[in-house]
Length: 264
Picture (cartoon, rainbow, N blue to C red):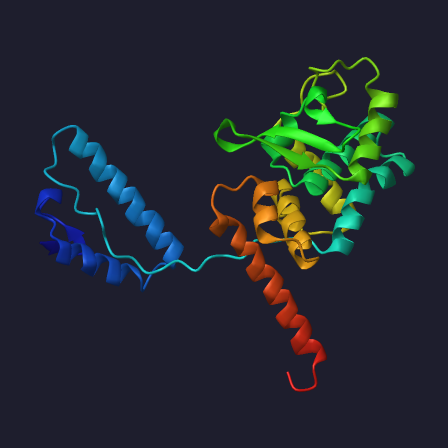
């Protein structure tokens, strides 16, 4: 029974029809993603009471919900990437940072973009995980799965220069990215570092290190890379996860067509 919008008969009395009515009514007030989050929270709450024997069934199991629109990943254009990667040395030239920090930050961003690394993979990278001669990094991704990532000639050159000048004493098992005191950089530190360089490059502040990974994948596909190859490079378990980047590429092609074709 509903009294002034509140259910008063207890969770055990909820029937599928009342749950459907709740979902239909909630769609008028909330966006689809918010509605999914609300139902997920209610489902978890009922699961909690089920485990304690205080509820006979979970009324929010298998609730039909409106389909979520898949958001296309944000990415930087190639020109924006160039501006961002150039920001650390611009700060150095302006006297706003020291050489160690400038080259370390440049190296971090070169690896994020040049190898498509997750930020957790980046901060977990040690020197013995990089084969400089072959330009390959061995990283540990989700589920403790290892994969080999080409890091590109530019990132390799920056790495060699950084180690030669700023990490001479670093051993094979030492982290590639450290603080000036020699401690391994954290994920949060990389996020803060990126915010500083985004501001200098005049780019949106809501961009995260993961957006460089999105940019890496999008630029590869735009240049004609095979989808399966990109899946392997990103370490995605499912091809469907990688396919979202093809939608970005097709969308950009459509925009270019609409701008340029006389009969668009």
